[in-house]
Image 1 (cartoon, one colour):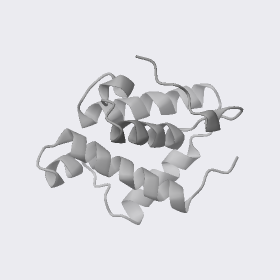
Image 2 (image 1 turned 60 degrees about the horizontal axis):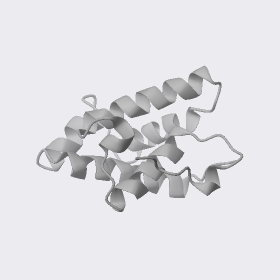
Image 3 (image 1 turned 30 degrees about the horizontal axis):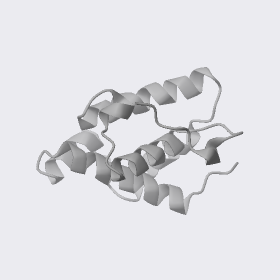
Amino acid sequence: MEIPRPTEWEGRAVDTIDALLHIKQQLEIGRPLWLFTGGSGAESLVSFIQGFQSCCSFNRLPTDRYRRFMDWLREVKRELPGEGWVALYLRQHGGDHHAAVMWFLSNVAEFAAANPHAG
């Protein structure tokens, strides 16, 4: 199954926040997480993010907006303990991986709305 590239991405670099917002949108319409990450658990999203960040870095694309998001998650939301967001959100959502992922992605959306992509 191929997911079409969003038209708003045309002609610009796509960063990790953009990709995560797209995944959130797709999950909200019923597409499965594994379609994007290769797995159904919250940990697979962490692996996806790490891979996407590495790809951006290797291709000299910006990675700082995701870093700012993680700082915001830790400093403003107080939701990035040393154990990581996956452990915290799984605990908060009774082990429900989908709910934990959606909570994480809702934080991504909140951050992106308050810190729009420049360019």
